[in-house]
Length: 132
Image 1 (cartoon, rainbow, N blue to C red):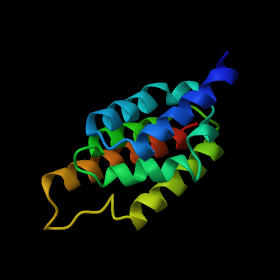
Image 2 (image 1 turned 120 degrees about the vertical axis):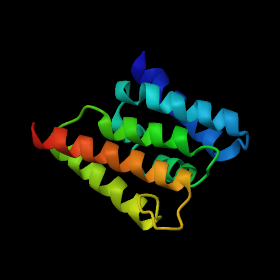
Image 3 (image 1 turned 45 degrees about the vertical axis):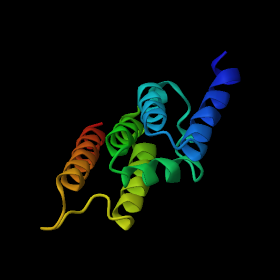
């Protein structure tokens, strides 16, 4: 059953994030991603189609907390250490290039909270991966 319906569910998440402008719907969708990403094939969400949608939501102050939860769940997903390291490195590069994990004296509270949460998740995952 998982093989039959999970790709359709992921496609529905993509459709909601891409086409729906309702903040509540997008937050709920990202929370669903965070809740269920551990149960699905990582390639369904860790790809060039889905990741940019989630990364773009990190910059939206109304949705960023839910996006942080989705990214954190994605990098915490169980997988072989080499695969996890590749995923974390790629996501960290994308977040760094989009200035999502950096702060400066002019950064507001939401920017500092987002960057701190993401860096904490990345650090925890890297430490855990190192010990495996």
